Each structure stands twice: as C-alpha cells, then as structure tokens.
Length: 237
Image (cartoon, rainbow, N blue to C red; front, top):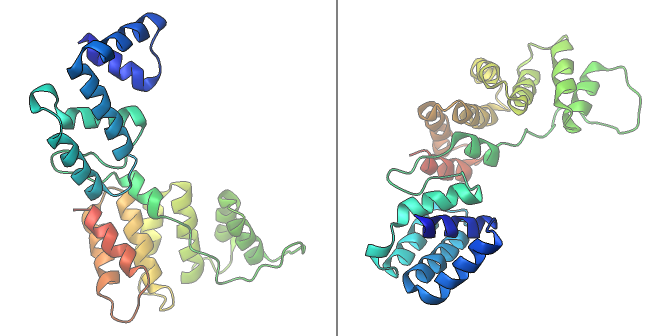
C-alpha cells in the first residue's frame, strides 16, 4: 500500500519532495500512520542492540503498546532488519544464528607465541619470514611461508597455517588440518578445539561445532575460551 511505501522510503531517506509533502500530511492527520512511524523509529533503535534476547524482550514491550489491529510486528521487524543491514539474527519464529556473522564476530587469528620477531632486521630464516607476514596480517605470504617450511608437518606450524587458511576463507583445508592436529600438541589442544569449532560454524556444521565447544566448557584443566564457548553454544541452538 502507498502508506507502507512512504514509511519505507522515509527510513531510507529517499522520499521525493512530493512524497515528503504527503508523508508530513499523513503524520499530521492520520493517527494510525503516525503511531506506526513512531513505532518503527523505536524499533530501529532496538535492533541496533547486540543481544538477541534483549531484542526479543524489547520487541514484545513495543508490541504491547501498539494496537494489534494496526500493525504486524514480526514482518515489520524483518523488513527493518533488512533495511538497516542488520543480518546477525532473524527475530521471529525459531531464531537461527547466521554462521558467517558468528564466525566473523568470534574469529581472530591466534597470536604468535612461537617465533619472537625483531622488527627492522633483515632475515633469511623462512620461519621468521612466515611469522613476520602472519603478524603483519599479510596472510597470503604467511601461507606461502608456512608451506615452504621444512617443518611444515610440525603440529604447531600446522596450527598457524590453519589459522591463516581460515582467514583466507579456505575453511575445508583448515578443518582437515585442525582435525588431524588436535591430538598431536598438548600446549595448543584447547586452541585447536576453539578454532575447529569456529571453522565448523563457518561451514554451517553447528552440531560438530557444539561438540568442540562442549570440550572447552567441560575441560576442568583449562579456562581457555570457556565463557566464550558457553555464549557461543547458546547461539547455536
């Protein structure tokens, strides 16, 4: 309907002069139209929140203040989510997590704890070169460096290679390496579980991801990413 189109264009800031005149006229003379615009303006603020449970409760509070015959809250919520570019979660029915958003929110390549880097010094050591590229976020050259290392089959080097592959979007290869590596290094075991869980999330395999997160949550000997794993598991339900 025309009023719906005017409201959408208002929030998109694409109203023509003639449409803006009609919009202002409706705001002044049509109470239902005005209430709907005010509601959507409040909703716009609500959906900028990060926590989906908070959003859900806020939407219910807003819904209770709007005559049900005049508005359908969930379709409008969905349209505003699209309009504002908020794609982390859908807000109706069975809420499902967006795998790409979850991965991007939680993934950060593991810091270099293997090879101390002295800046400004020339080197012919391929291991140092690989980690310099890694620390500099030059992941293409980091991957080339890790591939060239004679100790490329070393579990620790492979772990950083898997991190690099995840950053470059080669999820399947990263999963293969992390699965193979997970029992080979005691010092990085928990890290393998965390990054393997994230890799599974990116691959839309939430069941495998939850299994790996469960290990972190239930591990009595480590606090590594325990709280993050709990929060992330809830978002995979």
